[in-house]
Length: 284
Image 1 (cartoon, rainbow, N blue to C red):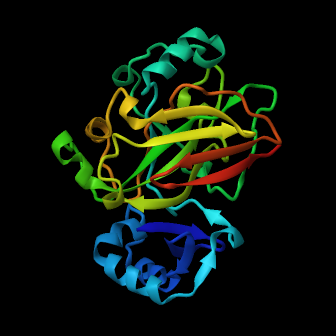
Image 2 (image 1 turned 60 degrees about the vertical axis):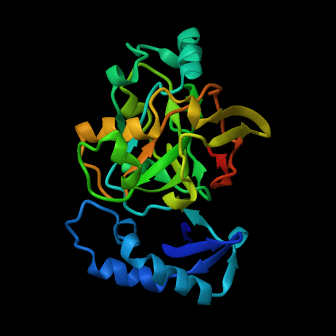
């Protein structure tokens, strides 16, 4: 199942490249969701609502994806987590380029630690990326992303895939400089997510997913999750040692090699056969 959000906070199921509106279910789910909950209502309700959502979608009139504004597929993630230095080839390019590494003190992910991006940085693929500091280097980082499906803590690798609701695509945009990672990667619009969430059953092996990203038609990053330093299972285990994970939490799983600077007017295109693709522009 592919779940999207679009236009003025509407919920849709994507079938054969078209959106089928199920916003009525979203209204009911949210009305019953506790305000104090740390989880996203739709993701938390998905196990109980999936069959009803599928039936509603089958009865709904299809809408062209090209006719809507796509929002981030998760409305209220409790937190946006991100894995640094999780591809060996990216570590090598960072070591060779002072413009990337600045004062980073380690190339080992378990020494660097999972970092957090502000939820207010989150945008969808129909938005544009605002360059916060045009006088500094701003880089793209195309990343495979996962969405947590249940509340959990201290998850073993053996159980890790069971706590994942689905997968999506993320752009971990970053301003290069001496500040802490979370500061440089939390500017408005620096956490792109989309085009939709693909439920975990459609990608049984997340450690073998190919993707690529281009800038103005030129492929910059081309990778497979099999090249990650920490696997998807290991990332879940590691993150859940530090945090309780909640339905709707998102993890950007790391950038492969090929990061490069983007400027106003550029167009970024993210493609993954197992999920879909999106294009997003860079604003001023």
